[in-house]
Length: 267
Image (cartoon, rainbow, N blue to C red; front, top):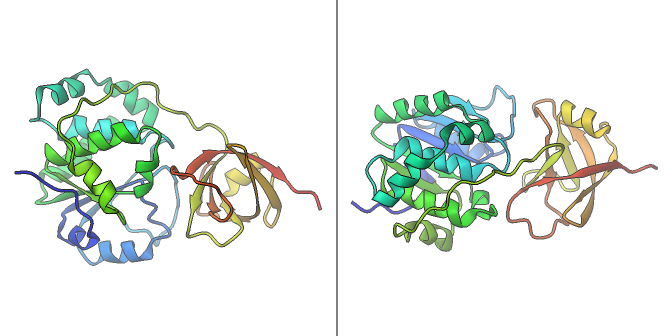
């Protein structure tokens, strides 16, 4: 039976297992509330490690920034078993060890998710719209289309427009590209966020130490030929070297993450 990509988040309340893929849960109280209204098992997959007792999920899987293409390939490997010969050939040829290492997602972690799904009536993958801005979005869309058609997983796009949904729904067994070397986002990284206060850069203690900046410092952030100025604020819940940046003054940025250079503004 043909399945269509879904848009309504209300359907998640009918799911037994919900995989949040790339969706930042920590600044999305409406989504948290919706999930809390049901007894779903939530697998939270996100590259930003945010420690807070207010977050409610069953399992957290941290992956590397930029590795979403690899994550989609792993989802195909673990969830798709009866598809076309071409898709099955892609799955069988996948170097799971390499992709697992490069994404930082352990094979055991996904095996546990599969076991949860086997016991569930409904399994959903709630996909962040940002992932479709990835430079490998064409291949990602094909893999999501195959996942939606040939597994027990239902794909849902957060705030998805008809164009995004149709792109995945219209997948017609096109050849999926081989997974080549995945991007590496070493050093300092920002994530553009509409939830951050205007002109603010929000980072954790580790980010502060590596960037050599302190609470209240004015900083210049450089990436892709752009330079923006922000005021740095510390959030002790944020771990690692990714900071959240308000979106004002940032030119078109389909994919929200960028490697950056940080320079303190002397006053």
